[in-house]
Each structure stands twice: as C-alpha cells, then as structure tokens.
Image (cartoon, rainbow, N blue to C red; front, side, top):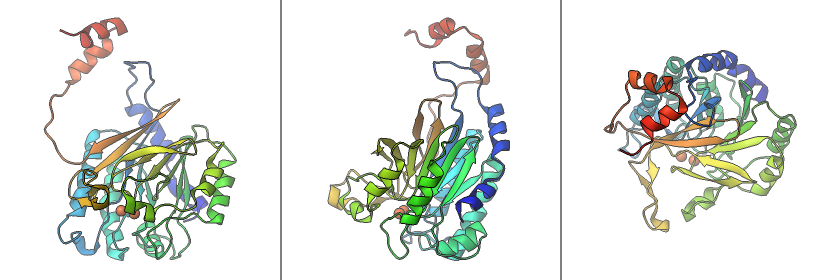
Length: 322
Ligand SMILES: [Fe+2]
Ligand SMILES: [Fe+2]
C-alpha cells in the first residue's frame, strides 16, 4: 500500500469526524476543551493460523477480542483503531484472515477505520494479499491517513528476514516530502519499532537502527507524537523532542519486575492505549485488559445534575472534603 492508496482507503474520515462531534460531551468541567480527536492504539496481537495458541498456551485471539470488546463497551466513536504491528506471529495467511474476520466487524460496530501497520513478525506480501486486499509485494507498507485534519503517517520500520528495524532512504525522503506541508491538527507518526531505549538489554539488539537519520527528518516538522509497539510493555519517552508512546501488546507483556537480563514474557499485564488529541497537547492513557471489579459508577442523573451546576456549585458539590 503506498501513501496515496492509504489516503484513498481511509475514505470516510469526514463522516467519522462528524459522528464524533455528536457523541463527545459538550459540557466542560475543567479548563480543557474535550479532545478533538481520539485514537485507540493497539499493538502486537501476534495471531496464529487456525486459532492456535501462542507457545501452545496463550489464547491470543481471546485477548484481542477482549480488547475490542472493551473498546466497544466504552461507547465512544474513535477516529481510528491503530495497530502498530506484529499483527501475526508467523505471517501465516490464515492468521491475517482471522485477524480481519475479528477486527473488521468490531471496527464497523465501533464506527472507526482501521490502520494496520507492519511488525517484524509480519510478512509484507501476505499482509498485502490477505489483510489489505492488495497485490503481493515486498515493498514497505507505509501510508498516510487524514482524520479530520489530524494526519497520521504509518511507517513500515521492518526489515524482511530480520527482527530489528530500519527506515530506508526512500522512506525518509517520502516522509520528508509529506511533512513539508503541515496538517491542520498536526501529525502523528505510527510505527512498530519505537525510537526509544529499553531497560531490557536484549531489546536494544532489535531496535530501530540509525535513528539520527529519522530524527533529522522529524526536527522542525509538525509531528506531535510517535506511536510504537514491539516492546510488549507500555513506555514513553522523547525522540527529537517529540513525545513517544509505546502501547503494550494485547497478546502478552514483558515482566519488567525481573532482573534486566532475565526479563521475558508473562501472560498478564496486557493493555492498549487511548490517545486523546487536544489543542495544545496529546495524552496517552493505558487501558489494562480484563474485566476487573468496578468500584463505583456515576448515574446518568448524576452527570446531568453536575452539568447543570455552575463551576462554583460543581466545585462545592464534588471537590470539597466532607
Ligand atoms: Fe511483538
Ligand atoms: Fe516486534
């Protein structure tokens, strides 16, 4: 998928933006206006053919469906569901078909377009034919999407046959040409290999290489955030002065509480991120997978009552210690 094809595939972003405006709260309880755009950032589902379990133990499909179910139950209409790679574990055709069969209907119900990005466990040609409905090719799967003025650039940071990451000269030239024209709400770059160091030493072998070349293209641009995956734990940092946010995996997460050289996967701690785009900033909020007991909920009547109060009355009703 080239950038232009991706723009065309994004299609109904204007309709989505309009729908979002309707569903977002118009009541302002604090100093910030509601986020103008919301992205659900998921990563590393690592699906296998025939619904097989990862390591013969982990039901990765159930975990993905759990994540989608949680998004659906939020009752929001995000601008996009962005998957930052390692969509499959082995690049098998059936794994992509199963991914498509699970995610496309959920995304349709949620009302959000899907952005699929390559990870080192994926295979470009198979992903093109089985997931994207495109002709087979081993060219990078990069793309540009426009979500009501918020530009999202997806970069394929994978190297065929390897697990580390790279961006080619052609990709960096392409990125530079896109960024030459700023977008109304700025740009988010999404990619599998995040340009941040890891406290887990072995991950640095699998890092994005020659990051200075990437930084040079980003400096001075309108890029407001970089979304990544690959690490299987939630982390954040900065790169070329730009905030970087890594979503953990939906399949399994890394147990960072082990000594650094012993860190490995654990069947817990999975999550996805909610990316809220405000006028002056972007937040990345981690949503743990799983149906945990809820402490309390607010009734619709309570919300209405709070909305009807003045800011001073609201402070009195909600902030004063009893
Ligand atoms: Fe992964
Ligand atoms: Fe990865």
